[in-house]
Image (cartoon, rainbow, N blue to C red):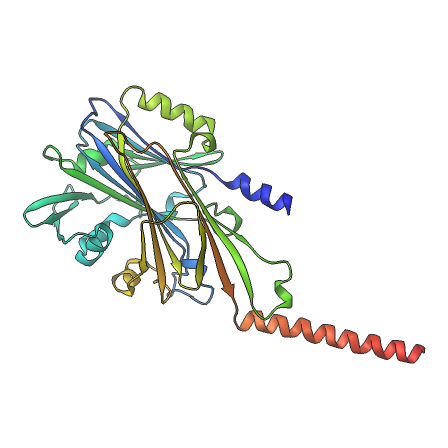
Amino acid sequence: MGKRNNKLQKKAGSMAVWCISDGDVTKTSMETHFNFWRIAGDRDFKGRDNHPPRDFLEIGLLVTNPKPLRQICVYLPVKVEIDSIQDAGAQLDQTSVAQGIFNEKLQCATTPPPARIELKNSENLFCRVHKFIKQDDRLDPSHLFLEKLPEGTLLSIKKAAIESVSHEIKANERIYFRLRIYLPTGEANSFIQVLRPIDRNFQSGFEEIEYIDFRFNEIRTLPPQIENRIRSDEKDNKVKISLLAFLTALPVHSELAASSIQWHKNRLLEHDPWDNYVPSGIPGGMVVYHWKKEGGNGHGVTDFSSFVKLHTRRSGRKILVTYLAIAFFFGLLGNLAAAAVQEWL
C-alpha cells in the first residue's frame, strides 16, 4: 500500500498561469476558471458515434485591460498533444452556453474578422471572446503555441491572439479565452486517481475511491524549470489574479466523501444545453461542485489547492458476470476437492 501511495503522490503536480507584458500592468487583472469534466466516470455511458466519453479540462481566462500583455502562459502537469486541444470559446456564440458559463443574462454577437464573439448585458459589453484561427484543422501556433516539457505541457497564448480580440478595446473592458484539453486516459491522467479494492472480483458490486488533487501556482509542486521561468517572465510586472474558480462535473453516482475546503455551491447539471456542448454528450445526471478564491485588499490570488475524495459505487452486468464466473469456479473446485478427499478416505 505504501508503494501505491508513493506512486500516486509522485503524479501530483501544480498548474500555473502567468503573463508576459511589455508595459504597466497595475490596472490589468485576470480571472482564472478551471472546469474538470469527469465524463468517463460513468462506465455505462458510451457517448456518441465517433465521440467516446473522455475526461477533459477547460481553462477560461478573463482579462481586464489586456493591452500591456504580449503572452499568457498556462502550465499543465500532464503531457498533451495539440490535437487534444479545442477552442471551447467558439461555442459561446450560443446564448444558453454563455449564460450558463458566466451566470449572467447575456446577448451574443459574432463580429467579422478578426473573429470574436461579443457578449453584452443590456447595452454594456460584458467581455469579448476570442475565436482561435486554425491551420490544418489544428489551432494555429501563431495564436496558441504548445511546448512539451519533461513533466508536463506549456501552452502560450501569443500576442497575435491577444491583439486580435483586443482590437479597439476600451479601458476596463475584458477579453476571454477558453480552451478545452482532453486528458490522457489511464494512469497518465494526473487530475484524478482511482483506488480499486483488491477483492473487487469477489463481489457483485464494489466501491471505488477516486480523488482529485487540484493545485494552482503552488511553488513547491512546480518543476524548477517552470518556477524559474515564471520569475524571469514576470519580473516587476506581475499581473494580479483577482479570482480563481475551480469546478468539477461528476456523475451523480459519485458521492463526495471529503473536501479539503468547503465548496462555494453545488447543483445538478442541466442536461440542456450541456449535452450538446460536449461532443460525446454527457451522462444522464451529473453534479457540479464549485470552489472559488478571491483576492482581497487589492492583492491577487497567489496559490490555491483543493483535495476532493469521492466514493463511487461500481456495479453492472460485466461485474456481475465476472463475480458469478469466479463463484462458479470456486464452487466447482470445492466440489472436486471434496470428492477427492472422500475418495482418499
